[in-house]
Amino acid sequence: MVSFTKLQATGNDFVLIDCFKENLTDVPFDILARNICERRFGIGADGLLLLLPSKIANFKMRIFNPDGSEAEMCGNGIRCLALYAYEHNLWEEKYMEVETLAGVKRLKLILEGKKLVGVRVGMGQPLFQPESIPIKAKENPLNMSLRAGGRRWEVTCLSMGNPHCVVLVDDVDEFPVEKIGPEIEKHPLFPNRTNVEFVEVINRDELKVRVWERGVGETLACGTGACASLVATALQGLTGRAGKLHLKGGDLYVEWLENGEVYLTGPAEEVFEGQFDMKKFLKSER
Image (tube, rainbow, N blue to C red):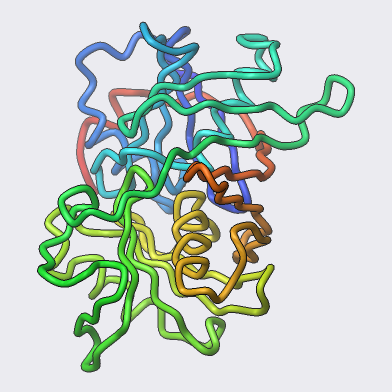
């Protein structure tokens, strides 16, 4: 039997396997993620997190989406991983470094006494070059249009270690995210597909955001998506370089400093622990 921990950060939920305790050599993680994340026949999650040793940081994080694809980075997932490491006595210092496919991320643990109440994540700098996103675009990805759902959308595309496409809308609550989201995610412009953020500007300090995550679908929150949304609206002069973002699962705070670095702050919570039979989750795919 393999032990796991279920965690969530602003409603973005994950199954975490501690690879300091579990030996998962030669496990096909794409198949495992597809089965374990299934909400009716599996444990149910927006992603499978692996906590691993690292040669260049304190820990290494790998994350697999429910469709089996591996993501470069996840702002909510990395906060869950930090909470787990702290709560399970793997780490006790205020700062932590975590290796990801998007580079080493530096985290600050926000403590009240000995209780961890939030995590501030250094998300790195946004990338705007087409090859860095990546996007097959001849025009400026920060101000371009694409066709989806029978009409053209003005979008801002960038990378926060993973690809994002930000779409401004008037009323995000009523917007057909489930229709337009997958069309943009799989648009031919994006060779690796893309995450899509639908953003309503409330004022210069607040945004309301819904996210269609690549390989997942609509989720209650997305950390890198929140960062991309703030950067996109700041570039257009619609907000300042810091603000609160209201997502379905709760609020996140994003800062885009003058040196180009983006910081994400938010909570994380452990939900429950359990065990599963690895053979059962690898035996067949539903």
